[in-house]
Length: 278
Image (cartoon, rainbow, N blue to C red; front, side, top):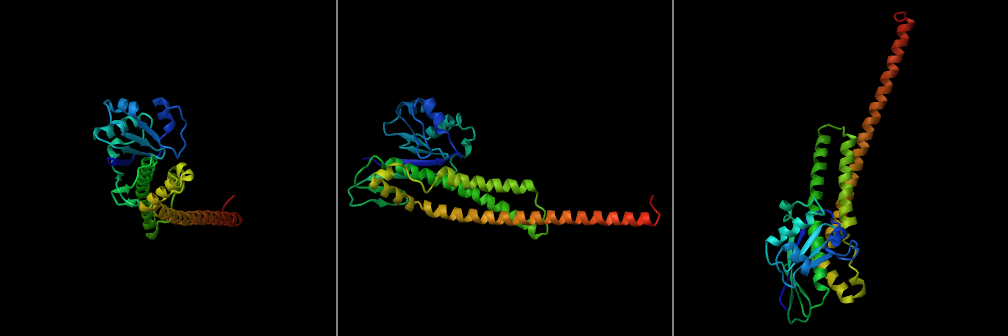
């Protein structure tokens, strides 16, 4: 068996697979854990040339696409242009920013062997390509979110610098925007990618479950997910601190306004008693 190659890209936060399926005439409703697999005549119409029988493109709802046995460099651009009809947020010029390559080899070996570039199996199983594609898709999507998390940290560092310089006031809008960014980050990680959830076949096929778990371990998805959860919790604690400071400052401001009004009222009363005011 010739090696099966995979190339994954994270191109969006979310892709509506059902809209694409309807357009392609695929009579199936897709859920988050199922990739939309494009092949044969569908790919021929998208790429506008005949393709090999083993060539496929898997599209995932959390914004990743995986090319299987891609042979021509312009095919990726054609696929992105096609997907952008349904998801206008896809930025073609930045599509290669988050990417990873892998391959599947079948050789005479006693057990599965993993390396950084490929996995070797003694016997081919139909579930191997989809499970490899799924792990790659999650890995590049997680890479994209990890960079976004770094940007949130940079923004909070700027807010902390302002705090250290005595600029204590933080507007409600700024707090709300930053909190929304953190919530969106957490949703993209847990709600969309769902690192801890497994494809259906892993529950019914023991070999598939073992293979998928090993792929997760090799790409360190669980560890990366745990680290991101911890960092997200730290972000929430920091934002809670900012919110407490901001509310304290506003409370102090209101208290001073009340004191000033009382002082003004006392002064006016004294002026009236002294006859200086009617």
